[in-house]
Length: 257
Figure 1 (cartoon, rainbow, N blue to C red):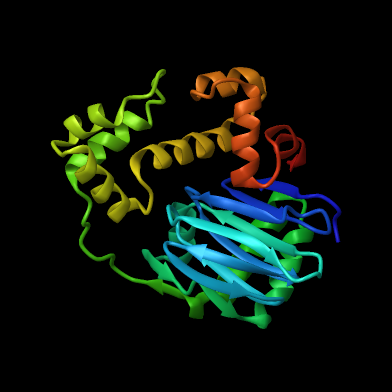
Figure 2: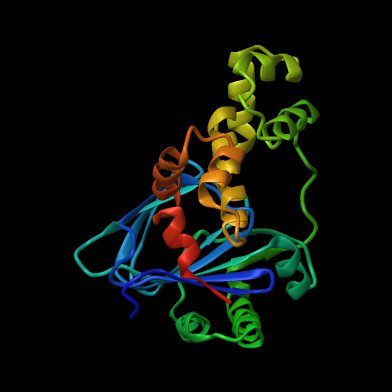
């Protein structure tokens, strides 16, 4: 069991293996990749798009890209888990079909060997092979097929594009509501209905997703923090740690490959 989180990168894929020094909690956040995880020991209390679950040792958790999630360790046993972050295009290419959804929490002990193999892979080819074997084992928990008609509102897409520009200072709620042709209250309701978060919280989450991508490169953390609209490096570090579980410097240091 590792004593600190270890990140392994392999092309489009990332694997996170934690052990006795695993963070005890992760605040509400999203990922732009699918999250495929298994608890090897210990358990967690989950919040997923307004629903609550518990996952114990041996349980698998599956989050679709963009789903709002939060988790907290339960019990006294060290919380060790292995997580695969897989972009939707990679998944759908491997499945040869669109991915519509997944069972969020399931007892699926037959996949644990595949998760352990994934955690110990080091070469890119080994990570990819282990991920494909894991995906094959998880097929019963996945929903594949033609997606339902999109219910996204075009005016909200304009607001999302504005927020993803990371303007400094960020646009006000009133300016975003004008862009959408809604009242501020109407915008908050519509945004929460579609994304699970109000617009300004969603914008912060998008900044943290962008930060995770940029931390793979050499950009100084202080410069990154300012570019993404944080007041300073300390503000960025506090916010990043609440959502991701480790400070940005430790996240960068843990990356392997």
